[in-house]
Image 1: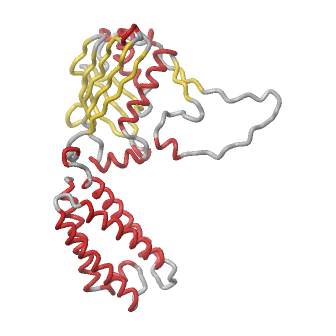
Image 2: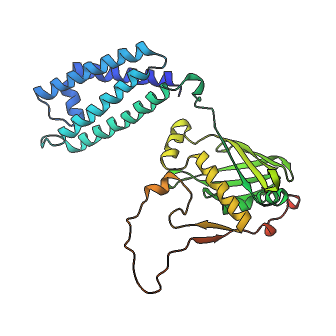
Image 3: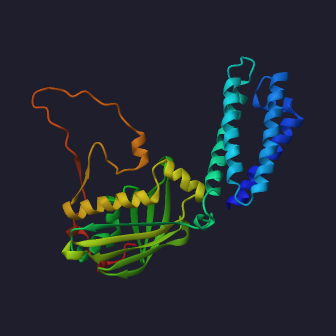
Length: 331
């Protein structure tokens, strides 16, 4: 949703809520599960005045009311404080009050999201329909033909792409992809290779109407001074749920740019060593989701023959096992 439309929605919400708080504070108290008396009605009217003022400020600042939206965020913080204090009242309705706190927290997140977007220069603002553009590159110390041949067998990709669960060739240059998504879910789509230049490049796109829309290319270049092969990956990705889905993905450590960098690091390991090395401290790369799951430190044991733990090694398909692109399309 464009930022001006989002801000107008929040503006209308402020006006509607403020009007209700001024005209019917007793009703708002009951709906929110708050004890209804003279004091709480006064607080409702004060908050109602604030909401009407915010409405006017947003409309005056359109189309990018950054300061007015941050006023809403500040108001949300105060509302959460008041609702938390109301929780101590034994005469308050627990279930309704919990619902009110959850609703205010959700609106606060939406207000912050809108305020951040309103603060960006218009030329840096992507539309809801515009996909995310991702670029990543790495140098692999292997000949270009060998690097291309391994990547060309698409069924090798899950061995180093941590978020890819499976790829199945459907014939006729098409393949079916199943990929991990935030919160333990997954997404699927069909893709097709639209350009294949052996040893140089592979270009693909998702089949329209078959799940998540994406397209991109991987290019293979000779690295300077005979240092191997430069692998350049570039793709456009439409996150499920649009920009909101993209924000949720970042929260869970599933942001595509970081995924691409982590995948290429593992790809380099596979080609150069034949293994993916996963240490106990960093088994899945540098995603945010992994760092949320920290474990308490353990004391060092002084037993005889005690050794430091070694990284685990995951066997990957060898380059020699990967068939050449001429043996058939698996895309």
